[in-house]
Image 1 (tube, rainbow, N blue to C red):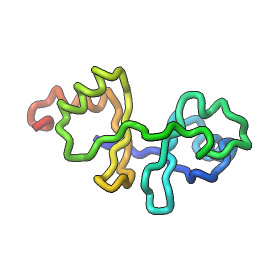
Image 2: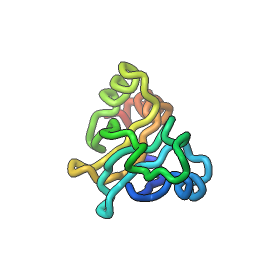
Image 3: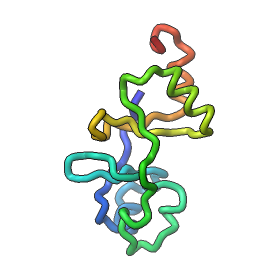
Image 4: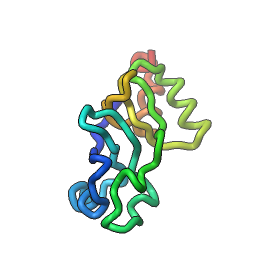
Length: 114
């Protein structure tokens, strides 16, 4: 259920990131070991092009582990009104992005939700 997501370093400039990811609404901020440090979303893209990712990223983004039950994830998305979440390993390494419609679709298929 994890989709690819763009990544950037905490020291990268917003202007350079925006140019590189060409309109993607999200970018995971990761260190050299691919550990999630934050997320660029929403208002981060309105920052000065000279701002660094670490200065405008959302800290502690919602994450789930790949072994979390799909119905638990679906319930969390619904309860907290979110449409996406990062998927990470137990030590915080980025795996990918989970999207609400994907979660809904998988949860509706009992053989995949188990």
